[in-house]
Image (cartoon, rainbow, N blue to C red; front, side, top):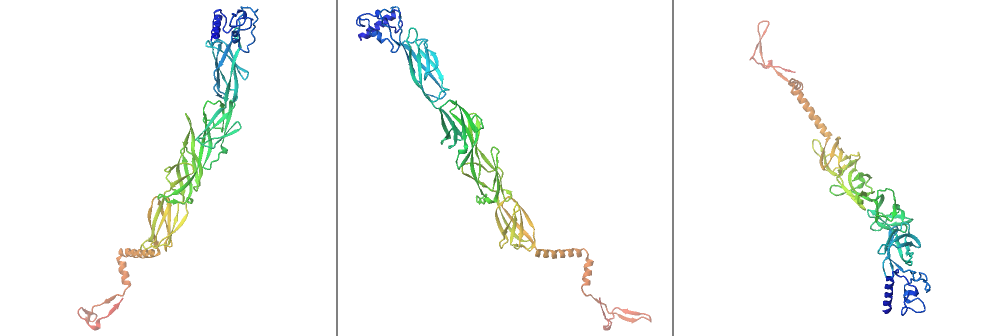
Amino acid sequence: MKRIFLLTLIFSSLLALGLPVGAVMPVSAAPQGGLGQQNSQPTAVNAAMIVPGSGPITTNPSVSASRILKGSSFITLNPLQDVGVGDQFTISGHIRDLVGGPINNATIHITLNGTLLGDTRSNPAGYFVRKFNSKKLSAGTYSIAADFNGTRFLYRSGASTHLTIDNGVVGVQTVPAISGVAFQMDGKQYVTGPNGNVTIAVDTPGVHRLTVLLNLYNNPSQRVEFSRWVDGTVKPYLDILVPSKSEFVEVGLNVYHQVGLTFVDQAKFPVDAQRVTQVTYRSAQGDVFVVKNGDPQWIPSTRVAHLSNGLVQTPLLYSVISVMADGSNVVNSSQQQFYALSDDTWKISMLLYSIHMSASDGLFNFPTGSSINLVAPDGTIKNYPLDLAGSAEIHSLARGDYSIQLVGAAGLSSKTPVALSRNQNLSVKEISFLDLVVLLVIGTVLTLGLLLYGRPQMFNFLVRRNRPQVMAFEPALIEPDGENGLQIKENGVRQDDEFIKWS
């Protein structure tokens, strides 16, 4: 304690004499006694105030007492935070003298692995700061040094620390989120995880090209197609400046799903898909797709739209425009709508109807015919047998215009047109040969009747001509009336006077 007190006292005396802080007095000026030895060797005070490595101090008693000796300086650096590739880093610290006082306007040289980065000066509080960027620095650990070259009154000093530069990060996010999508950067490939994103480590700053490799995507349940990058670029690659301003780079992908088709009637009974020749449906964006025979087809499930907040997935809604079966459209346009989901099957309801028909004789109404030929709208002909009652039921017929022809009836055959737009009961009348004979007889009788009704004398003539007539003469008495005549008496009747004339 006594020694510390004496040192403090000496230091205060030096300040009172106007010597700079940390200056060493010549040995001849040092007080004698317990602070040092009489043989002109440096005292303990002198030794304590010399900075190691700052050079020897002359202790020759012949040195002038007016010479001012240099004092010590100390630099302390604040801890450095780790930074990423291309990010800024800040060097800061304090420069002080032996007793902790700030040193103002001191020039501090900042070096990185011995290469000068730049200079800075301390403020009145002894604080210095300087920002640098790492645009030309790769990832790694570097030595940072802050050096003060000293002045007339201060010895040089310095301090060092370490700077760690981490790899730069490029985040990629697929929209929608799809796992298993491959990307390439700097010759290396990266694949998105379950959330549809991947983080790529970059060890050098600058421009790096990111390429999407959709040809490597393999998923049996869906296909993907490149749409656009978040900045609107429609090429399958994007040049990215590292460090990047955004946390993730969004890439839009169009998703395709395979959709199968099944068909049912209005009663929900299944319909054979082989009857369907063509299905046409249209997306909400106007894309039209035509499917033959109801075969499964890959169609877009989503599209990517660019909004103010980035890329947004838009599901596509499809409307069934037409379903052609038996030559006729069996759906109402845009009435049935579906989304294209993964491994999805659309169940399309078809407008199919039934016909209950009966065939009978035109006049006598007895069953006739053995079968009927039904001509569909596409011209195909199908034969359906009739039962003993002359009836048949035909189901699952596409709406449209049909014609029906009776087979196996002895008579005049004709086609009956049918416009099928609902379930119908149809009665077919066949004019048989019997009907023709009866009609001929009736027609003949009526014709003759009308002819004779207007000409009664012709009727009488025909009647008289076709049957025998008996003419009777009344008996008369003929008497002579003179020489040249006879006298007939009306009431005179004799058996011998009667005779009959036939005509």
